Length: 412
Image (cartoon, one colour):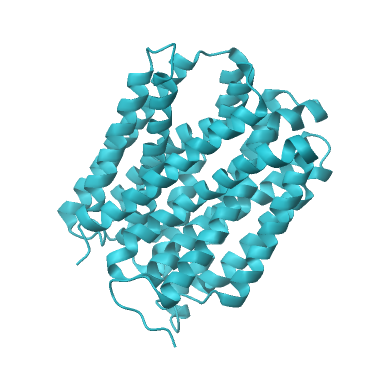
């Protein structure tokens, strides 16, 4: 039988965190792997950047469907069942991608992959937080989101190793197979949330989107959507179009994938540090500092044209932004009650991805085709992150005024 100290990760809380993190990381592999090989797929299928942007957008739209339609089911039928279903769907989508011919079929398969990501992330955050010791909730909630970054890191290095030797098809085959294997592990070892056991009828009644606009949640819900939308706008532009921009400058795909993986490594480090600090110094203070520093890095990099300082500031700004977005989901898990938690995480992140991530992919295609300079793009990134920080500051102020956020202050 597992024995767990209140302030320490071990036993079932640790096992749940590892399995949930694994499922989210696999979603990162399935979702973002295509960004590195998009020029190869586009060239093979004669798909221009503008139409590849629409293919990317299919992933965003389906992640919205998963977040709004499937993630809330976790408040009704349980977290575990929904996680297993979403993992199977996205794994199959990735496994079948090499058989796609043309933009339409590719968009359909990417729709399945996005469906898994939109469902898995909010449900995994909810399940990990509900199993976690109180003093580790912010850390684990943040690490669940950062696990997407782990997947991006793995697929970045995987591209550098696999694609030159065996082609982009091998990357998709291996990603899909690993995804289905992870689902098998979760089916065997993952347990349901202790806060939902024996409470299914109450959850089914409470898990309605209108609950996000009642009991003092309305303003915070809308502001969080704005904050995350702006963050997703910058992150998804970088994730999907950064490799293409680097290739357009004359670098190899190996360099592009390694640079992208380096960005994600820094995001993993800063995200883990942010979660640790949130449990000790308060979520609001740490998240706002991260947004401010991120915006400062982008603006400082804007006028630079030569040397290593501009890419260094860009890498730091992206890592701080990723940490702030990851920490926001952990912060949200303390704002909403357990019977509404997966619904809240799904709807807020899902609706934020529609304008944010969708804009980052579709508009990104137009920006790349128009040949915008790196300097202009960096300045726009800094402005978007600064506006995101203002929305988050309003949420923090509201929660401190209401005194309702579990993670607003350091855990006891």
